[in-house]
Length: 186
Length: 195
Image 1: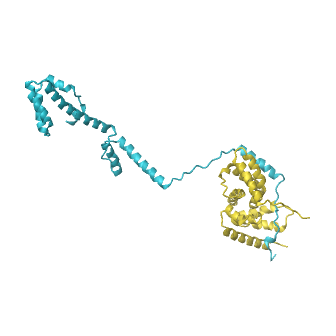
Image 2: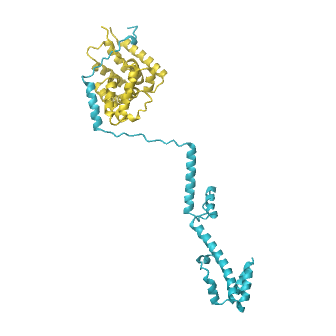
Image 3: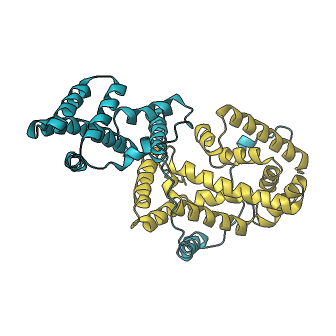
């Protein structure tokens, strides 16, 4: 056995298998499959998000959270620390979108309308009833209303009010609405 | 008398594989596909397992388990390789798992090898050549990797490229393993053969 070469040896199968083994094994396999009908577990789909989409998605998420937080905490300005959040905070000041800003804008408009209507009513009242006792005061008040000095206007306004009777004040007051918010600003 | 054996050509094998794959992919025809698959590959796979495990009953269990796994996980076959490559891979993994269990039971690798060599003597045909029995015992004395490479190359005559896909080894590693396995077997037979 000195020059033994395995490649020259005949490739024989020396094991034995039972007769009809291969026919039986097929039936065994089908029996087992029917006994354990394991449902197919399909592999989960994997989405590959590109880097650009990931950045865009994270930005949208960031601004979404910031906007949501802003709308839920409109008065809490001091908490803002990030510039981006400050930017978001500043937007409603220019374009009032939330309730508080709208209310503030409405209040401003109401005050302006009241001021205008007051001065117009005073002029109309003076033209309609040129009484001697009130004519002078009304003319003074109308002219003074146009001046820019606040103190002079106040003095004149008080003078006029003193000279007006209660009925006259009530007439003037008909054209205006009582603004409850005014109390808050005194 | 000259015996002619009809070897399946590569083209006919591929067309058969395509037919099996098509049947297996359809829920309604899956069982028919499995039957065709078993008809085509059960013999090759059984002998591959048997040479690894030696014991018939264990080889039978492993073969059954292989076909059940093929049936249940056919959607995982991506057709990147040939169907029989995938089948060999499953059968090989199942056999290796069984060998691991056997080693745990026998405590050491040496004990497991000794156990398998004794199994050879119990499982061979009565009129088997002495040198053939020695060859089988020599195969059982090899480390797992060399045993796999040697049996699949020597008996199944699988090309190294296909072996590479089945065993996840480079062609160079496979050739080295085959060379060492062959040398060890020849040495074993020379040592143990008594004229």
